[in-house]
Length: 302
Image 1 (cartoon, rainbow, N blue to C red):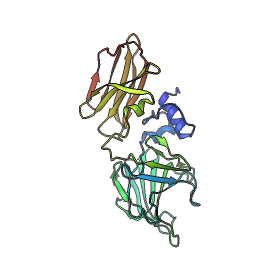
Image 2: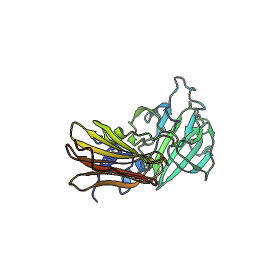
Image 3: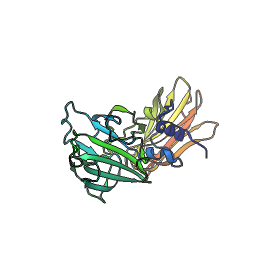
């Protein structure tokens, strides 16, 4: 199987290798290890909130679980909203009693064997079998656990693939980037699907500036960017509807005299980036999101 640029970048993030290639929101589905990114997980807290996660402070942790807090005192986070990291179906909404230390637990299935866990909740606001959208509140931060286990309020968060515990616990990915284990402070971009958390510059990478754009009605915008340092153009199609849900999206770039390069698939946030060297050469560019499309003439020849 040939590895594309997006698959290489996604795998590098998951394996903690790092990369100078821009982070891709929507890796191709052929890579099993990259499927977690295709679900477009965001932080399990409302848009704009800043939380600190830690995977090493609890002796109960088996692998890549994360405990989240943001307050300056032990009880500061009690009752704070917890939201779905990605859309899916509620598989569990129950107090685990003496079964384990999870207390009030919500588990959401996201398809493909992927699921997310939200434990120690003070309250649960969803029921088993209910469909939830990304950013929808599912409960509040608490300190519920098994009898006799006294803990301070925090959110215990996990992502799992499959059923073989604890080897099925996966590294958490937020906004397309692997969590910085063992601890990291992050701001949530879980904006409930109302705002695309990415910008064209983030998609194309450092050094790229927007030189043109075309609206795709209410469905999104296609952008043409240029990097003065290397003479490369970049095209991305940013969605404005159905954010976090994989829908047909396309971006293309054609340098005059060369074959067209296209990225087309079912993506949650954007198609592309599509790169081509185009210094002093005319380019044709465009894309599609939803029912709207844009195709430029050959232009930007300087």
